[in-house]
Length: 518
Ligand code: MCA
Ligand code: AMP
Image 1 (cartoon, protein in one colour):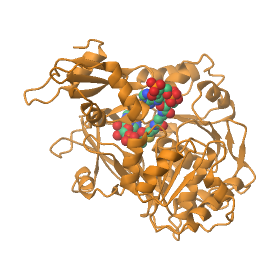
Image 2 (cartoon, rainbow, N blue to C red; image 1 turned 90 degrees about the vertical axis):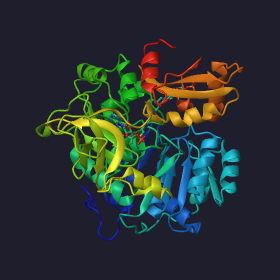
Image 3 (cartoon, rainbow, N blue to C red; image 1 turned 30 degrees about the vertical axis):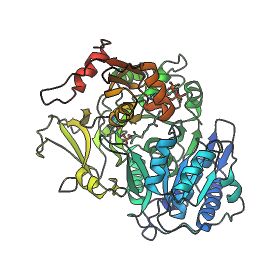
Image 4 (tube, rainbow, N blue to C red; image 1 turned 120 degrees about the horizontal axis):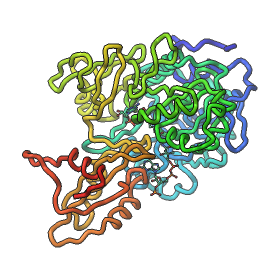
């Protein structure tokens, strides 16, 4: 039983209004159960988001203010996200692995009115924030402490959801690029609500579903696909502060839906406890963010009797395609990312902008209510990424077969996806090239059993300079988010180049994948 249905409200396009409307009638039912034994009812979520929204509103922030957040995963961090929506501000989540130079760029670029960080990082984060003109820096830790909660505790637990238009900004997600600095993808209330409503139907969500939430909450997968999916269906979440394969397997007996990047499936398969019996209560396993190997797909089927549903999306677009859930729509095909979701137009074009014949390979372009509004303060970059007729160029290369299934075969963008995190070689090369004694470098992705792909750095020394690969790695670790740091570094005499003088990354990839450095 629902208090209201979850259609887009004509009077308020605020995503939170739709999520709130989908809360079950019994507000005392459990909405979130955590791995450290805490239970949050739907009423708790309503009150906590109201209090935090009131706190944000009490700060007198200008409309459209960004709330930048770099905190560990906790239910309170999710509440902060929901409260930001509720109060009509713009949420800016930041990966906890980012270090000071990365944070300085995001804060400098987004100019958030509020920054929320851990108590441990308050010293350096607040310094960066105040320098960038941020007026309010709060702390929030994963043990339900911090100045944000202290202040919110004094606020009313009644709050009227701010009225927002579907086209108003709800979040900015930074995504790196093949050239230049990271770009902030601007997502609207309408982008996210339309996607959540489509997935509700497409994946056959039910109010009695229970989602195991084991992903980080600073990217589209964990923050939007998972949280919106559960909330818009009034479904309970089992909230894991970090991915723990043994715990996930134990919790499967109480759950029905699981979402993970391929690395999570690989790690679950390494557990002898993953059996048909362990997975018998589950309804749906969803994978995405990186290519799911066919071996993983098949082994999962054999071990659990379940067929993983693979889907495809981007920060700029949320979810774009999905394998079918309902058998009458077709089978879930391993190696494919399924059909374009309802409302999404997806086409494959060649480099000259002509459609390719069915089954042939080309660049994937998309259009739909889920496609973002553009890059924050980068109108030229935004224009470059759209075609004249309004399709967004994903940078992914793929094909559509006669049945309509989409397969991603590669990327035209120079990107490594490692354990579901994106690493842009250009950013890492830029960093390495600044190190003393380095003439130039190339970073390529090679296959990795756990992370799918990992980076390898190939570096050339300046004449007369001696470089130590271990030191190069150590230097990167001190400055960059840990997942971006190449797992290996080789110092070589020369990089392979084509006749135009361009570094042949495919040659490097082949050489280092085969374990045969030059
Ligand atoms: C951790 N390490 C990694 C990665 N994660 N190295 C490469 N790639 C990674 N993804 C390294 C650390 O640098 C560290 O190395 C060592 O592993 C241990 O770190 P720790 O944090 O303990 O690792 P973990 O807890 O085992 O994390 C692995 C993980 C995590 C659980 C797979 O990476 C993860 O949660 N990935 C999910 C990412 C995600 O949610 N992506 C969705 C993006 P050292 O000690 O040497 O420093 S949203 C998206 O793509 C869209 C739009 C979509 O379609 O969904
Ligand atoms: P992000 O920039 O983090 O949003 O990452 C988006 C990129 O992840 C896409 O452009 C794809 O390259 C990749 N991606 C997401 N889902 C899949 C999938 N199921 N298979 C292959 N690649 C995927």
